[in-house]
Length: 295
Image (tube, rainbow, N blue to C red; front, side):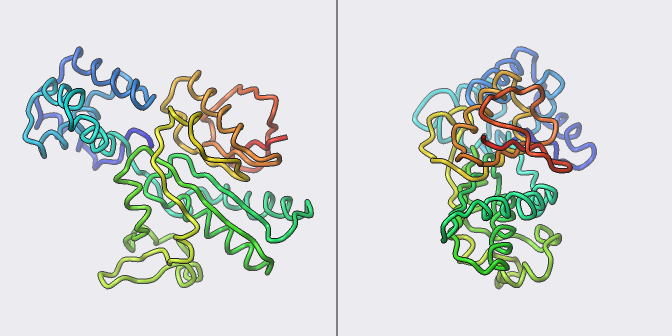
């Protein structure tokens, strides 16, 4: 879940010209609503981003005034339903399979061997939580990496992956697990054969065995402290915290630590959280990663 910047060159500038000019007061009103409901802060220089993404949804509804649309998502029976739809426009799903190969390497080459060496009784139980999972590429990538490693080890194991995001539309895509050829181009042929089937319209769907291991659920990160999700071996929260104020980043990270099992791993995006001091964790060193182990 993060503000989108994924547009063709000049697209935002072109889109701004197609919609009414937004006043500073209107921008501040929308920015305050976004921060109140999602925690994300919208800097003053992102007015074109807001105009573009509000405008796309307003055009679908036939609404021309920002104030009218603001009132629409604030009041009435359909307000929260419409807000859920709008959130999909205000967050991007800039993700891809195997995006963070250093993280997958850390899990396979260091964390899982360490976990197994602790004489954990079989079947080995591995619980993973992908926070801000978007359309599912990250949790499926982690699931494939762990499943492939454990298959090669030839031991009994249980793998469960919880994938959460604020966008219900993104979650629906993840549950279906259907992706275009462009989306799966970085996956090696062996994994494609093992974990995907080709659909009639030449897309690729994650096979049933892997999809059953990944559970998608709706979560506003502001409510992470209230979630009933239990203790995890691995929690990933990458490229999300940078859109929050420092105090909120620390609060969210501290809450995620509470969901770690002893020895569990919290993986954040590199550079997302600096000078963080939590007595229950220690840095888990690996190249091009920001990870912490529950001690």
